[in-house]
Image 1 (tube, rainbow, N blue to C red):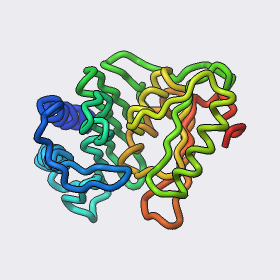
Image 2 (cartoon, rainbow, N blue to C red):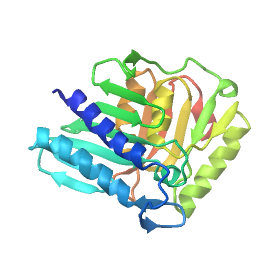
Image 3 (spheres, helix red, strand yellow):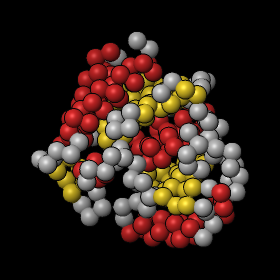
Image 4 (cartoon, helix red, strand yellow):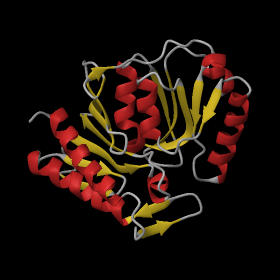
Length: 250
């Protein structure tokens, strides 16, 4: 099976695990902070994905929210978020996903985002056509902020929260509607599908947006990442349909 098919298989198997445990009253919380939760299921999901990917590609590296695995000297690295939207999952809000990307020599070449509750799977390969459940997709053609729906994330520390809330305030005065949805990967998938027009966040991790970046760009949108000087492999992100003047609210 090729890399894309393998990623789809891993994501959908992890999705079955998440769906089977959704709504369970005995979900184990491994770590809880003011603004975030880590579940034992996060690790269980990543372990399942790791097993599937590395059994088929034993020489590869894997880098995920729950740690690393495989050959870290490899040019091939799987980037995994086993549950993007853990807080939503824990509170029984059915808006979360599995995100898997493959990076080869520093370039993302495969992306899969799987929503197990809605039954939607976004797929993309470098040079190919982005798909939702096998049907080609593209970003919206909206050009005005007044017509747009924007997703603004607020981060988890005081500085990121302050930036996010101010952006939300400014954008609310211009956009048709604003959303804070709790899953960066699904936000990116929704931009690629034309459902949202932009996503902005001052600090986000690579595993949250790696698959979505390729998806948005090949759907006709634009993604700008700026590395965080204080936080390794964290980024500020501006992802859009490529048309709306998002700089007017930043």
